[in-house]
Amino acid sequence: MKRILVLCTANSCRSIMAEALINHLKGEEYHAMSAGSQPAGYVHPKSIETLRKHGIDPGSPVSKSLDEFAGQSFDYVITVCDQAADEICPIFYGEYRKLH
Image 1 (cartoon, rainbow, N blue to C red):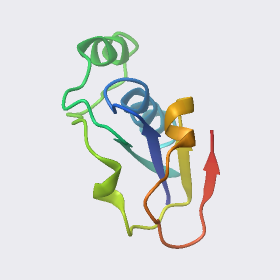
Image 2 (image 1 turned 90 degrees about the vertical axis):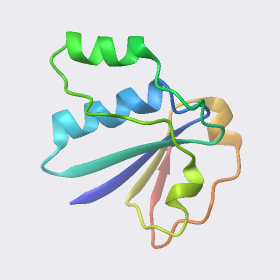
Image 3 (image 1 turned 180 degrees about the horizontal axis):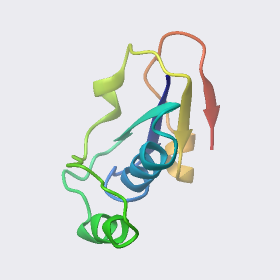
């Protein structure tokens, strides 16, 4: 199973939704996680509401720092906002593909 880390600045909406979508649509092939460079400390309720409205179980997401994943290996690191794409990421082990 390939590992994906989805990054944005606050990890309160876009990256949370991307994590849930990837796990819902491709959960047999990929395991997605999400984080933020400056986590908001909360998940926006509308993101959860929107996912549920479309039949996607978001689980119990928590806004967290990308530092929690430093040193781990991923197959893909995906940024979902321009600000996160321009920021310095922690070191992730192994070869991974960075997408924006």
